[in-house]
View (cartoon, rainbow, N blue to C red):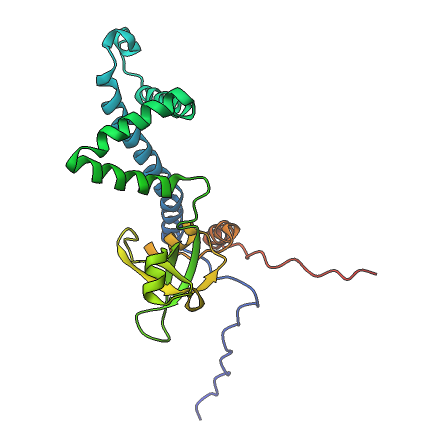
Length: 256
C-alpha cells in the first residue's frame, strides 16, 4: 500500500496593506521618470527664456553705438543688455506719451500714418488688437465658458470675447444679448472658430484662461486640479520604489 503524503499547505497570503517589492529596474525607471518630470519643464523654460533674451539682444544692440555698449570693452558679451535697453526705452516712451507733449507727437504721427494708403489700415488694426489685449480694463478672453458644439449634447471650451457691436446685435436679434466667443482647437489653441452666440446659450465656468488653455492643449489630459496633488503623487511613486507603505489619510480624532 502506497504511503499517504501529507497535504500540501497553501502559500501564505500577503499581509493586508503590504506592498510588493520593487526590483532595481523598477526603481531605476521611477527615478528616471521623476527626473524627467522635474528637469523637463525647467530645461524648456530656461531655453525659451534664453532664446527670447538673445532675440531681443539681436534686435536692439545693433541700434546702439558700439562705444556705448559694455561688450565693446569686455572680452565677453553681457546677455540681457538689449532686453534691458528695450524695457527702459518702451517705459520712457509710455511716460512721454502720457504727457501732453508726447501725446501731441503721437497724434501727429497717427495723422501721417492715416494718410498712407496701405500702412494706415495695418496700423489701425494692430493698434486695436494691442489695445484690446493689453488694456488694463479690457474684458476680452478673461472668462471661460462651455457651449454645445459641434452637435447638441457635446460641450466645448470657449473663451468669451467682447459683446456684439450694435450693428451686429440688431442684425441678429434686436434687443438681444449676443457675445462673441472663440472656440480654440486642440492641441493648438491659437487656431479655432469665432462666432456669436446668445449669452443664455453659454455656460460660464469658474476656470482661469491659463487652465483652460492647458486643458485644450493637452486634449483634456491636464486637468485644473490642486497643485499639491502632483507633489503627493510624485512622493507616492518614490515611496513605492523604496517599498515603503504609502502614507494614508490622517486618522480622525474625536474631540471630547
